Amino acid sequence: MTPSSLDLEQLAKAVTPQETDAIVRRLAALEGEVQQLRTELAASQKPQLEDRATFCLISADFEKVMTILMLAHAAAALELRTSVFFAFWGVQAIKKESQYRGKPPLEMALTSMMKSNIHQLASSRFNFGGMGPAFFQKLMKDKGILTPAQMLAATEDSGIQLQACSMSMDVLGISEQELLPGVSLAGATTFMELCGRSRISMIL
Image (cartoon, rainbow, N blue to C red; front, side, top):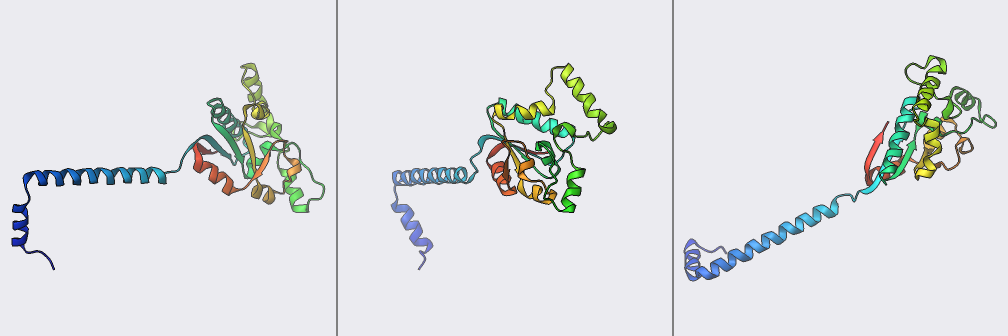
């Protein structure tokens, strides 16, 4: 049963101005509390980002490997927990050697076509049969700039975590024994989970 317009008018006349003001204040306070609850709920639903930087390298090009390692060291210098996820061709940058024993013919063929370590990486431009990277590294040494191999060797001291994509290794026939010491295996879900917690994330 809904009240008639006459009942509402009588009720309005029965309420004093002081009571009306009190009701208005209570409604305003209630609206403020509701808005605060909405703000707190929205904040609780946002992912809590950590002081972390997560990078992914899918290329074995000399200049891209150099860039990702340079950025990783810069992030570590800013006291961010830093990790680099090497996927597909990028895994070649964290190999220590190529191994053929025990591999099926197809994997042996893939191994022969890949680089054995970071010192053998080719440049996507001005490679000149491997002379390009050697030329660039000579320039970097002359200018006191760390080469990709030197930056990779310094990752442990900088606290940078190196991860190899386990699925990429399986596809390319790369064994864990071919990787540098200190490199851990991780899956794509681990990389995505770290990205969701990181202030900085990048794929190159």
